[in-house]
Length: 483
Image (cartoon, rainbow, N blue to C red; front, side, top):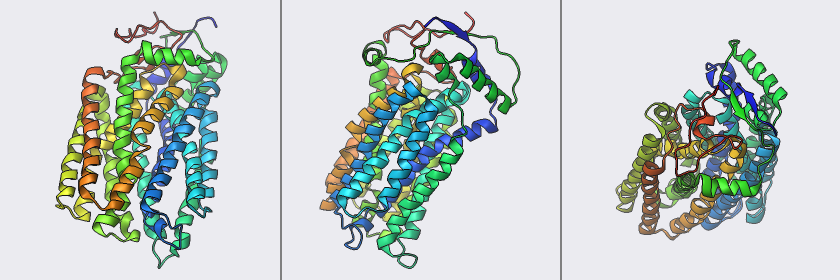
């Protein structure tokens, strides 16, 4: 297609923060809340699922069910991520929410490890598909000067879901309130009800004008942009133009070329960040309840109380540290948060091995560590969503999520679950030390390969494929609007 000039990217970035932006963040960011709800519910009810009157699972089976969820998330991210680039952000963030809704309701009616794991896999497919469409849409709609803090805060809503899951587990695993045989089923059913409410709100959101522009749908992009400007209350004109040649489809060979040749250093950076945080989080959080039950004799219906401070630390970290990623800068903050997270886990793991901690002090120590680690993990998603071309943004997020999760998250839960079941603190400390080393290594890689994307338009951080770009061995020249 021929080259066309448009002011839409500059108009999106110049918008003042408004109630419209809040609606976008709430309606889309809730996907992370759902993920947090799912992960925490399963983590909290893990010990309860081992009872004969429920599903009678072993610790290892609980871990494998968690891996089924992660595996489904990988498949969903890859499949729906590609479709989000082809068919649009809006269509996919509606479809993936429906997949999640149906799958989590099905989980409430499972009867053994096989049906439970299968439904967890389907639930993961829906959540994984959400990642690519949601992160792409948010980055493309939020002004550049605020993109870092908003993206981190949105990713941090995972922990609102975690707190909700903890609250549900406390109430629904209390024998005085409901029979344990039915409490865990009701927890999943309520997740489906929440998804239905979100679906009703999300259907009113617009398609990304940037996506429409890159696919040659100029009239639609202009109409959506005007609708947004009316909602925000902005009427002033913007002169800077972006020259772009729309590409309606990006073939796989071009995707591979961009990742392995044109921006290979960024690819190494993204893989390192995603793998380290995936192993760090999935291996630890999926087995948190098992650690409390096995080593500290915490009753099943009390596990949720220990997740509250943990969730609070994880939510407050991105929320309070997020603005520093836009002011101090991406490279410095990402390296610092990854390094501090790794060193903190190493120290806490050693104290755990030496039996210096109680259930309460263990929870508080992990809350402090994950205050920083949550910002680090969120910055990994921020990085891979803003440093590659817009035309392949969703599939790029999917590929990095899939690779990082497969390398760092899929084997972690069953590995940690088996270690916990064996009752050995030494082996578990070794796994903690390995996760800590990965985080420190990621910090070092960031210092050398990090991209200074703070406060820069997406088209400056990485030029669209329809524009001229330089190789990864050279600093990409910014696109200067109006030239």
